Length: 158
Image (tube, rainbow, N blue to C red; front, side, top):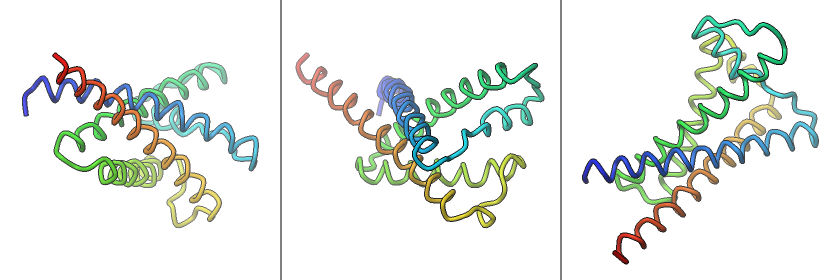
């Protein structure tokens, strides 16, 4: 494995993470409409706690929320890429990625006191949260695979 391979995978992971973030955003918006799920402010609340920032109003808090949501989701594409670099099959890498993203969500937000611990969540919340993260992991994995196959074909053609 060469440093260029790792750098290439990181770039593909970031693009794949961004695609996955768009997908989870759509999934969450549909859940808001179809089952009455409330919009999450967890990204902004976590950032406020960790960085000590305080948005001046509702519009600024929503802007912070969206920026952190997209940055966080995009960044999670890198671990997905590294799973592929280290030789996991696409299915295994996507499953491990899903488990990591879901586990981080269920540990980090309660750890920051932004959400209750998972044992206090209702079944509906757990199912929705898991579904959204599954959508994210699948789209991120599929996008990474598509990008990786395209670059492999280009390398072979050269």
